[in-house]
Image (tube, rainbow, N blue to C red; front, side, top):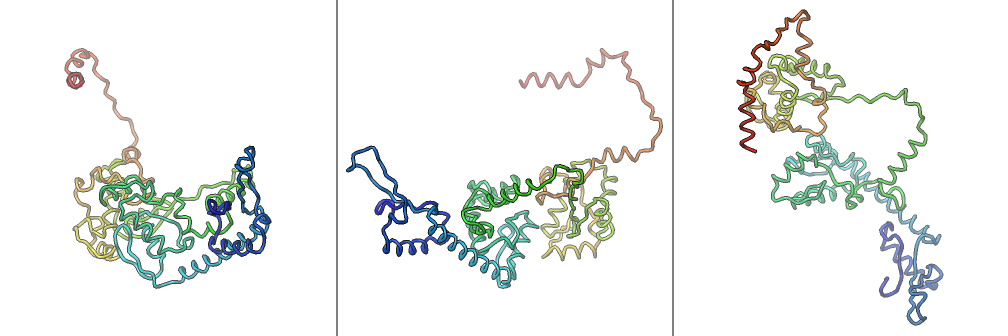
Length: 378
């Protein structure tokens, strides 16, 4: 249209239904001259008349064009909301998890909630998504092409990609990729505005109505999740009491008896999380078909408290959390301070250092050998 007819349409990407838009103006241009609707743009206005050229700009400054765009947007939104409602009520959905290949059937929310809960992959609430099947196919196609969904880099094999997304916490989509906008209902709500712009407007409106007095503000409590089931508690003490009562797993006692420092506690929690996620009993190494079957086994056999030897879980690989934003890790305390707090108070004898042999001590210190070795390496 630009090359052959010198017609320029402004903001083409914001037209909700471009074919209908074209058909409408094709009919109108056949009824009246183009200049009745379009602004005329003169090119090379300072050149001789034979070298000058004219283009016609069709934009929403024209009230008729604005009304047309809004009507197409309204129809598009109606169709999207109807599609969304059908998907919300649909119980014939079938799909497999992109990370563990477990298959799900019923409503789409079952699969989306599984990926969010088990793999920390959250693409939003199911009720905010439309054309879910196409969305999941788009994401699966990228993973099949060994492409990270967040940074969009390509890797040599699936294992490398999986490790990258886990370690870099890239189990999420790229918010700057406009390809995903079509799958979120919010992007159809207002003509010419993306979900980010709508959200910014809401934030600005909230700030405009906010009072300066923050004295009554209270931070929302963060709940922690049980190592073995979906029970949540806002206080770590309540969660530990639940695990001891329901699963015979006494975390404070284990920490005290083994003398675990903070980092060892982190590795122990991550180890148990991973074993439970894999539906494997860490006490007897038996593998189960589901987490529910594993929980039943742990309760019947009492294996929740049957920890393996420390060298099985006190490994560097368990520094990394199994689930992103695992709030239980943030509630762990340093056992050294806890043990110090439990020691009986009283006068502790302090033995002064004998400095009479200080010169001989310096000569025989192991630091001298270490410094000599460092000097040879440098």
